[in-house]
Length: 317
Image: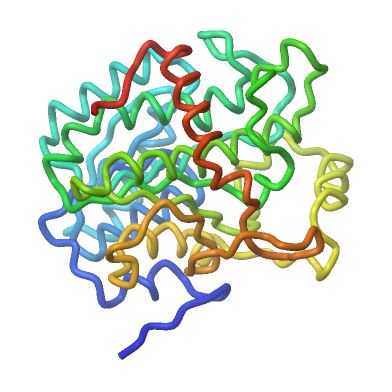
């Protein structure tokens, strides 16, 4: 029977027929919102879920609630701060030592449209957290993911990737004035480009990678936004139809679908939204789809070359 899902589908619905017994999933951002729901649903299908976040108190509370709701669920905690690569390395090495095989890596955590700030290593906070922190985490965990193949890596992007391509000539806003929306758009484009690169490199070794747009959801991601910021964001999106928001269970659906769907066997390096593979955008007025610049393999190679330079970490060949 063909499974059909869409905008209104929930994470629980898309995972209903999936058995993840014996699988280990690593999910970042399991202290609020989509991360908690993603972890909950994966565990409900039998996966052991490693819940990753930076705030120990919030993460322990979130995991305690998850365990209370599913006493048979397997939940583990790992702490790291994606904006500090030293912290990412420590946390990733701890995860790698504890879990020799990782079948699913869901790079869910992120920041959105924050004021100009720099990571410990000097990058724009949005690119540094949303992309580079996850790049280093993924790099450090790849031997464990390869050991578990077939495996999948999911990088959460956003429809906000439309706001900017990867700015290879000035990615850190050292030449031009900082624009928080361009910085956010660039970071979300980078998430898709990273997925494209990973899939190209590792698909023959059993790892497929996907970029995911969860949809518009009211979560802590928007904590930096004022009313004026929200209006500005609305003004930047295509005006073909009204903005439609999802609830958290719907917002986590595409991540869980990309991580588990049998329909995606043999596929990868694509951008997913509403539990489907998005088509490249042909018209600026299109309300769904992926910008061609986010699938550009030359841009993906530029991004990875700079990521290696910034972090000193290289993806295994």
